[in-house]
Image 1 (tube, rainbow, N blue to C red):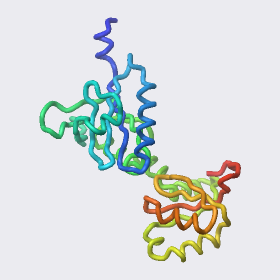
Image 2 (image 1 turned 90 degrees about the horizontal axis):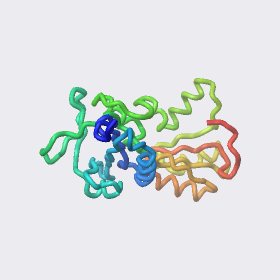
Image 3 (image 1 turned 180 degrees about the vertical axis):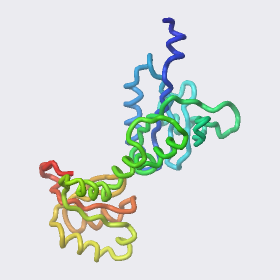
Image 4 (image 1 turned 180 degrees about the horizontal axis):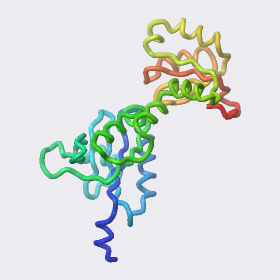
Length: 230
């Protein structure tokens, strides 16, 4: 088989990275690892970056470095038409970019929570990873733990606090947490970042700076060993 025939048979893999979440930079590192791991004889990696503002960019020609794609890639949008799914240039010039499969390598909200998965489902594009429901549940730790409890899977005790409740009456929320758990505790705030709440000050300070609608308090010792519970 000659090289041109082999090139034509390669699958075009859209590696989707970046996004609007607080884990934007982590996504870039993960996507670079995925691209390095794709066999170039079988797959053509097409880097698709989403900026922190939510703009979609696709790598063109010699653009291989992911930060460069985000800065200077071609602006595109994903169509949700399953009969003609493609990345359409926003400039209006040129044909849309066709892809065989999407590999989402995004962390946190607007990427790992079912939103991107729903768009790809609408577009009829196959993609790697969990679907809408699995992604949404996995991102929402409160819902995930409730479902695990229903399935009789052990979970550690927890409290979920929503931002609007905290902003309305933080002292009331803090007293409720302290009545249930002793310090130190793990605090999960903003894109699933796990931080230590070692005392009253660190718990309150971390809660105030969380970037997501809520944060969880888990009954675990940050310095201790895991007991196998979710």
